[in-house]
Image (cartoon, rainbow, N blue to C red; front, side, top):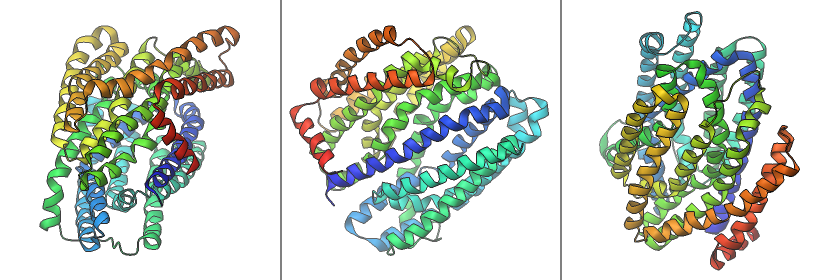
Amino acid sequence: MSALRALTRNISWNYVQAGTSLIAVFLLTPIVLQHLGEVGFGLWVLLKAILFYLAFLDLGFYNALVKYLAEYGEREDWPAANGLLRTTTSVLAVLGGIALGISALIAWQIVPHVFDVPSERLAEVRLATVLLGLDLLLAFPTSVLAAVFESRQRFDLLSGVSVAATVMLAAGTVAGLRLGYGILALVVVEIAGTLFTALSFGWLLRRSYPEVRPGFGPIGGRELRRIRGYSTWTSLNEVLAEGSAEVEKLLIPIVLSVSLLTPYTLIGTVAAAIFLAVEPITDTFFPLSSAYDAKNDRPRLRALLIRGTKLVMAISLPLAVAVIAYGERFILAWVGDDQVTIPTGVMPLVVVSFSVTAFIMTGTTILLALARVREVFWMGITELALAVALVLLTVPRFQLIGLAGSLLAANLAVTFLWIVPFVSRLLGQSPTEFVFQSLVRPLIAAVPMALFMVWMERQLPGAALWELAVKATLAGCVYLGAFYLVSLTAEERALCAASLRNR
């Protein structure tokens, strides 16, 4: 299979997964909110945030495993790959046990004293926190199976299992809530999904890659020493880069109120359509960049930086414009205006911040593939420190708007003053040319889209879900047409045509 065809296949399957997740979130969120209520929904978001941060206890070994398995696979060095796989499995099992212990500590020492949890819900939240730690105990060592498929760029198999798990989780969620088990039902469904995913990947691995032999191995030795440095810095970077994007879900119940988590989360859920749309593409860039780096192929890395970023912008910018225009009305039509109150002005700030993150996702993925994890870590810690300083200054007066604005300001500063110049210089690419090709040219295509939306709002002013969907779809088509005509070079248009022929 050609490289272009494999890339097209991987992206297509990732979009199947993303589409399934989007449908599940769209259908389940009103149901969960209705059964749990605004406070209960906020508590579930808080629990998911705790789980999210506990997941960083894998210490970056998953990403390190993907990188080095990709390199071993290129050389077909399966003995080394198996040794690395078994050592990593043992390490992750130990880390999973630590995650379970920490979850118990959080349940009894942090939850009742730090977060704004109603006293009548405390026992339920405590038990749910411990069960989520149990989920990580299962998920950490079995995640190595998924790492094998990602390193071999088999996103079709990864996405197929994820789609099946999503459908199963959705059905279990509805059943558990209707039986009246509340938050605990959602936690049990999460654990069942982890077990289903692990068993599915184990069966597929035996059929697809019999030369790969997973299992438990010694915790130590040459293989562990090789990836430990990379994994440590990758883990620190993940805590900062990804963790800073979720930090508001911990800050809100601490400095404001747990009830405000519900409107903010709904805003973030709608705005996250940007990530849902671009991650199927950017997820393929890490193993691809690692393979290019193994061959020291700088020209292909430069092409990936510009074209990958431009492709991400082609998808994320029209979504950003549509969400800013219709997002608040969409939420009220989606969950009901009697269920939640959306604070004015927060949505645009969150959407722009997500768009800036999407813009630099290709660049940071390439940096991680080039093992420049220390630099990415310091970029992340600078952004987090700046964001926290701004939050402390603005939240007491401006509340959620101050929170969202602080995160956006820190994101803009670090992205354009540090990350863009650094990755451009590393690959021998002009920063000005990179920004012009990958950001300015896609932004030009947003002008006719915005004008079309103003005209269309006069012709179809309704705010029903179907009307908002029709308007967003038509506006997106205008953007894509303008993007193809004014934002792509002739060579890029030829590549698009070749990609369509090789679907």
